[in-house]
Length: 75
Image 1 (cartoon, rainbow, N blue to C red):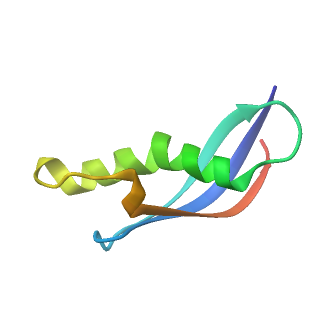
Image 2 (cartoon, one colour):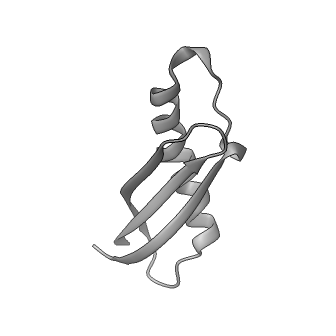
């Protein structure tokens, strides 16, 4: 297993705050599938970020979050 790091930006459809962050994950060596990576970031990082920002008065849905992966590399 190899550890990778990615720099990404998450944007919500309504909430006007961007999440500029990094994300680490482990996978077998090989090509990185950016669409699978974006889904993983959305589920494991961005959804929690926007839930924290929105508080309990607004429900956050994963389909309202877009992810742009800027770069990836072995960590």
